[in-house]
Image 1: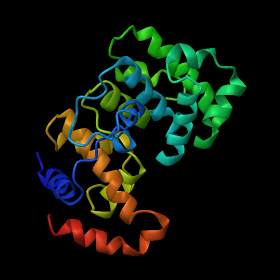
Image 2: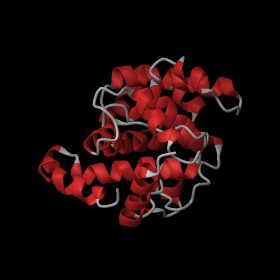
Image 3: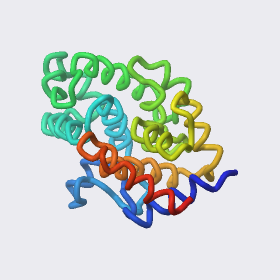
Image 4: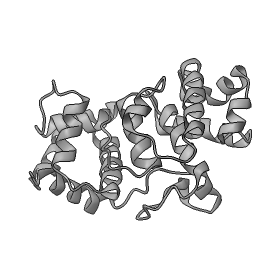
Length: 229
């Protein structure tokens, strides 16, 4: 096992601290800032919270989390953040609610398909293969659902993770999703909390160094991490 990734994880954790992903509206109501739960890896604790994560994983495709939060809040206000209620919405009602997250025509369909799948599970943990058979669920969405909703050790590879891996020469830019997933999973302990935290830390780190506004500081970012390698 190559310890380089673990060193990067520890450096990011020291620099940014625990992130508390996946944020949940139920925790917002309990007074948790933004629904985040830093250092607490027991969530989700209810079926409805697990379902909310699935909804969020669908909505976050090709958009920002702030946009997803607005869409989820719309569903919450409509009383539709549970599977039975969401399926009872008309297509126009659902599209209007999730419009802030973009691609609302596609995502409305994907949400209903994912909701039907969730209900068919009867509280069982899905397999990755089963999730990938659901319309609108690709590799990243499937791994997000498994890692955060079902606490299964599946590392999530998103666009930010790819950019960081390429910038640090951890992988060739031709590497695909599964190759990068294997890189992380084969060089880290198989630990759900670590996977959740590392993914969230990479996202947080990328916000500082990988947005269009901060691309000029990429070399600073590379220098920052390389000092730990």
